[in-house]
Length: 192
Image (cartoon, rainbow, N blue to C red; front, side):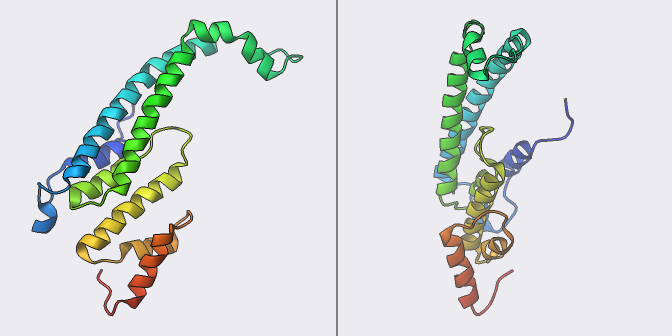
């Protein structure tokens, strides 16, 4: 097992750490809705990981028993011929459960990104709560989380971090990010 910590684990720890910033940002009563959504996200993520823990060995057992596809058989026909083996390992049920759990995790992550943060806890939750399914575009999801957090930081402390980030972003910018760039150009003084 790797001794390095995952990004998600590090950010979760940061989000749970006491705020050491301005008193308004350190208010522990703030971010009530984001605290609720964060708890839901952690519960959904734990359920998804539990299903994944059951799915991985079942899929490995299937893969070990699956015969190679003959040259004269299409992959689709080969897959259909292996359906009894697939069912033997309960993969339909496990994949359905994994997809359902992943959809709940991803919905919780989306709700977190859509909720305005009132303090550092909320900003941390936005950075840590990412969609979990492997078919997600991770670079886009990470940038969406960064944009959401920077938008709240800008609102809370009067900075223009989002406008600067939008200039170097690797994914297409959201419409309101361009508004942030225009707003920052209209300001007399830039806060850094």
